Image 1 (cartoon, rainbow, N blue to C red):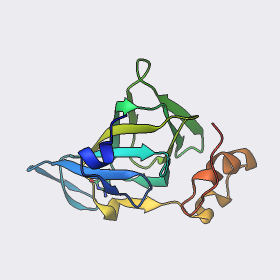
Image 2 (cartoon, rainbow, N blue to C red):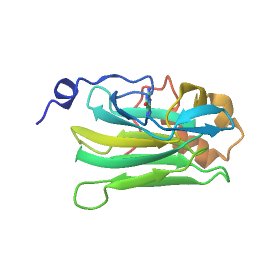
Image 3 (tube, rainbow, N blue to C red):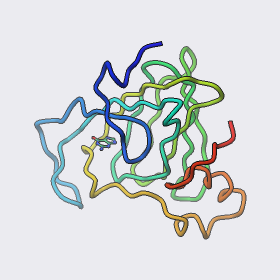
Length: 162
Ligand code: GUN
């Protein structure tokens, strides 16, 4: 198994997992929150010791491309309060676009050893556009949705269901 963390020089990401910025567009675009690069890109890695990306949202659209490993499941909460689950798996599905404003979490499925994903963020990533979920963000949801999202709240360490 490839040691992507070492090979790509990935660092711990505050969402969980590991990452490294691989592209920042030299072009900029005005957004309601300020000027941003038109796009940025990272490598993002989930491993057995960091198997989960915690629930967060961003103003920008985020394109995900599975490069190696998996399966990795994305759990999303749309603005109209629907939970959607998409699994990226080699040979089956390699691409997922998460629109800006959608809450997103991710985790390795089953006994998957790792998942290496490339993310393209457009307009480009800025922490000012990023927000981690808090218990208050899910408190008003129906019980089944709260249950689905609870394992992914930042600070949560129990494993999500496969
Ligand atoms: N998530 C998606 N893109 C980025 C990025 O460029 N930096 C950080 N820290 N997180 C990201």
